[in-house]
Image (cartoon, rainbow, N blue to C red; front, side, top):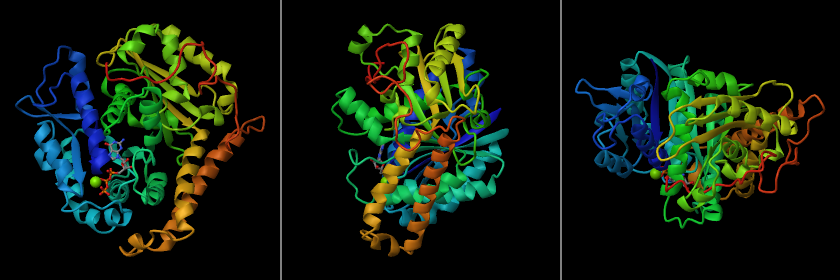
Length: 464
Ligand SMILES: Nc1nc2c(ncn2[C@@H]2O[C@H](COP(=O)(O)OP(=O)(O)OP(=O)(O)O)[C@@H](O)[C@H]2O)c(=O)[nH]1
Ligand SMILES: [Mg+2]
């Protein structure tokens, strides 16, 4: 069995991690509170070991290290479920206070060894580790600083294993903390150089999905985290249930990442429907295909039409005709050739898993590696540059031992990745273009690519 060890780090990392375990434990027939199996199908058990460990007493627990510099997050999870192994909780004494420097150099560094010891124990208990899954934000001090530290150590200690990050990207609409752009900036070097697969979960897009499209009144992150968990469940479907495509992290890596540095992936999910909206949906595969190629269904605030897809994958769940899925996906590519690079033939892949997610007849998850991600990186760069120019708030970092040069180096790293994506858009046979923010292709007014004309747009997943 090819196992994965999860590390959930900081406030956002643990909240999203918990939502993920909620969703996938149900899919595998494991009771979230007790960790006991109550499933009905052997398929639920077949590849359970990828994410869960089994005990002799037939209980399952999440193979996850639960990490935070402050204890309260961890206490919450401790009391909510027996799915977590108590020895795997690693808590510090004080939050890193939204400061990368404290996550990386002081408060976070203090608990690093304990994180690595626990990780080692889990790694030694598995048959054949395929890699690590790290869940964290880059706006907070722990999620940015401590995660960077952990990644450096993991790459050194486990050079043959893959690191896959699910990264919460800050949005001023969701958090008012003024230094978040600095923390995001300082996280860039570790993500560029040490992560193999980075799934970008942009709070800006998630905010828009809930607020503008679904008109949900948000009092916290619960809705957002559920959308993220559904999407993560979609991305990991092929790792958790029998199938061919993307059946392991390395296969995802090979299929989705044409150059090692260009490993930043945009996820999307469909349908995102309320009960009311569901009544008006045709519930067809064509709708799903249309929706996953709509910018409105992406978990990143970017416009797919402003760049080119290097690679794309659609993971479909539920009973449907593989022929129809293939035809529709190929049709989508053929109608939008201008939005796909022409130097990777067959750069769109599909997978189908019979088992639908809870409460839905079928769903589709999108993974795209697009040059349009430049606009997200540019947003992060601009957000930090404007403060850095005046050295605003810099003393919080220099006071913890960091130097201004580290900010400048990180800016260069971020600019370099923007340039890499831009030049890969321009590598197209016909001179490409479309990478630097210009409109590369056609598409509909709602931000979707040309498709079957089915209604697109995100809706609430809560009734599902
Ligand atoms: N999607 C999502 N974002 C969150 C959640 N909690 C916090 N955030 C975002 O994450 C950033 C703050 O990071 P946290 O993860 O809370 O911080 P941390 O890693 O615990 O670091 P410190 O608290 O500074 O030690 C902000 O951009 C928040 O908007 C959550 O549950 N879900
Ligand atoms: Mg915190």
